[in-house]
Image 1 (cartoon, helix red, strand yellow):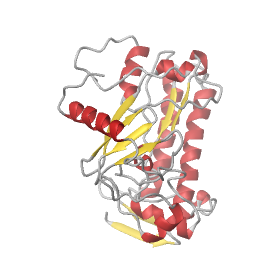
Image 2 (cartoon, one colour):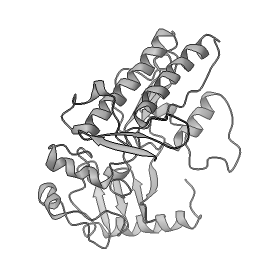
Image 3 (cartoon, helix red, strand yellow):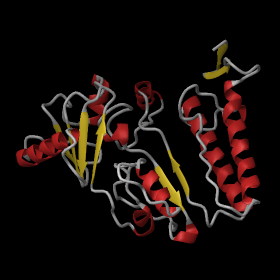
Image 4 (cartoon, helix red, strand yellow):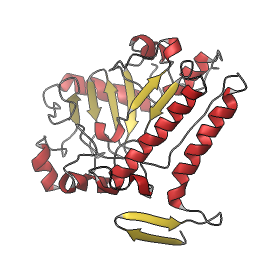
Length: 293
């Protein structure tokens, strides 16, 4: 970065590369380009795909001036409000073009807040992980569970329904392939499932999921159960432990029943030895490539 200044908690900077490149201009520019693309493509009366990747909520935190101070969570909160506005512009463009009803619109996000975001619990009485425990790069739900909003009114994905089925962003590959009628060859997207029946009628397609922390430690989700191998969680400061009031994460392993404990406060590792043995054995099979879904 060639130049960066801090003013009132907001970052203003000029980045490398293109002359005059300003970090705070990126989000508005790509949002406007996305809207323009929708307008142009919809006139062709042909199917099209738009992948719109915002620069938020990742750093640098650079909300436009009109969004500064509109939230109660500081510059980061203001940037989230700007992100909501960007998504609103996309939705409005689809509606104005007359293609909203027949468009599969999916809104999701990055996984978990960075460790420095935890300070907002103290500074703004706001937990960036909401009711979840954990941070980005963790095995806990706060590090892996992400927002997932889908709309496709003409094909039955509508009504503001809440779906509690397990999904993975890897499932978008097989789902889109199914929508456009392209059979997947053997060995292609082996971990992807067509989740359109789930989005339409809450019919579960996935019953398990393997995930890993930044250090490579693995976790296994089976139905309501989440089994986590030790060592894949960011250490928790003492002040946070007092607020969260959960069992220690320093244990031989972690087992949570997410149907009753979404905040992962109660470690059931010692109470269900047979389940631990079964899930650890299955996880070992998967990592050795001996398991089939």
